Length: 286
Image 1 (cartoon, rainbow, N blue to C red):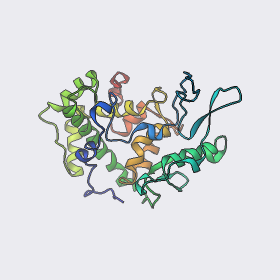
Image 2: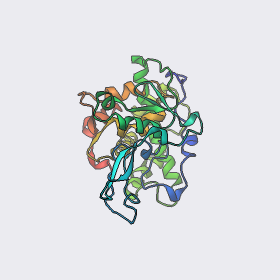
Image 3: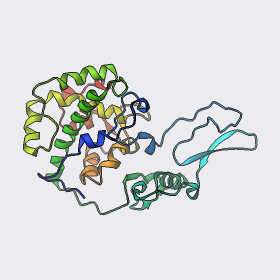
Image 4: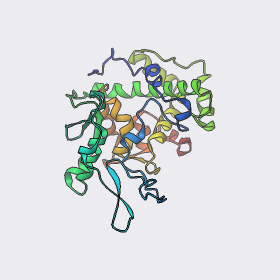
């Protein structure tokens, strides 16, 4: 457990980005620091194309598999959790919001599917990567420190992607133009283990450098569907790896939903990261 304090280290960008897939396998705009969206995607569209095997090109969302009915028409049905491949190690385990450890994301989503239509199933989400463990309560003072590290981390992620984007497949051209201004700014705080006081001073002094990274991360998560709102499932690729390291993650994102409607709008997201209302711009989601 990493406690949030003045001595807590922010996520190591170099180590995390080093784990990114080979360049030719990365989709445009992909954030290699967060886990692959597909691991936690609950809203993949069904492909209507039918080959000789009706299920061959028929894709189902996580937790479901394709079967054919009596008329040989493909359909998605809940996967039996017992048919999921056995976990190769504890690193594949995931923790659900029911505080139960599942062997893998496959086992989790198969179980969630069997609960569709029930109150328990509606409330069940993937909470974080790894076996369930005690997550210490997040104090008010710690909650205020969380966005300091997150803003700096997002900025450093983008800069690292820009430096490594030799094949133009990590960032789009429009994104690269935005990040180039940050990368070339001599006032930019270099990645490192900085004190919270320094991070706060840098945000106040170089506020404009943080506007685009905050918008960019929102755009990376808002995918299913792209509607200007983040659901619990869309947040999962960012939340799931962070919670075991940052115990204020859950409370932070819960309080980002200021109107408590279970959706985080761009305006709410930006406000959580200290971006002023007049600087929230949907055109920055590029």
